[in-house]
Image 1: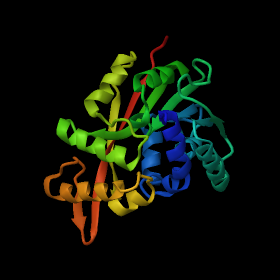
Image 2 (image 1 turned 90 degrees about the vertical axis):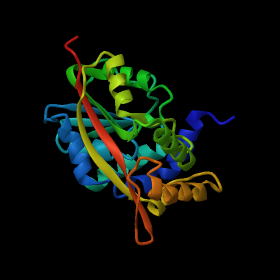
Image 3 (image 1 turned 180 degrees about the horizontal axis):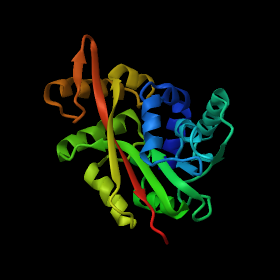
Image 4 (image 1 turned 45 degrees about the vertical axis):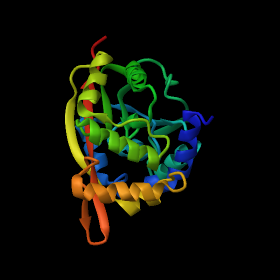
Length: 258
């Protein structure tokens, strides 16, 4: 039986370039918003957990003293190194490794972030607790991820579609569930910023690697959603395209003094 770790490695090895070049993923305004949301300064040291192709690491590195990315997938880390070289960013470092546990000492970073990764974690609460451990007192924890509808049927439909599109997907959380994760690991109520990650179905599928036959199922789900908004994504048709927007939340909380 294929393990979840194997699914992650398979999917993100293949997604390394198409994911990193997708317009919504590399959107500079969204990346700058993430760095600004936690008040990044030149004194900060940043750890980006499940860093993928390094876009967030490079965005933080423009402001912070140093930024480090860690990811399970060697192809993603290779992409991050290449991206940093392309951008002329040299205050970065990279590590291939697991998120449970994070291979870093306690309190080593003033900002610990993760973007578009929590819906892939089997144990999100444990990962968030590790992020808190890695964060210095008075540092900031940042989680940015797509948000599922609070309506159970729409959330279930979104998660079914995402699982078909990317078998390494576990579950997208509602905003209330994300807030609860912060509370469960002892963090205060997070500050919240929202934006929409815009895409269209065929573009989404070109950077995805669903199992044979599942792409057509996904197309039908989106086509049906134009009529009844069954995925909770504000799906609409523009000419021959079906467009939609993933709602994204950026949650930021300050770690306590101890």
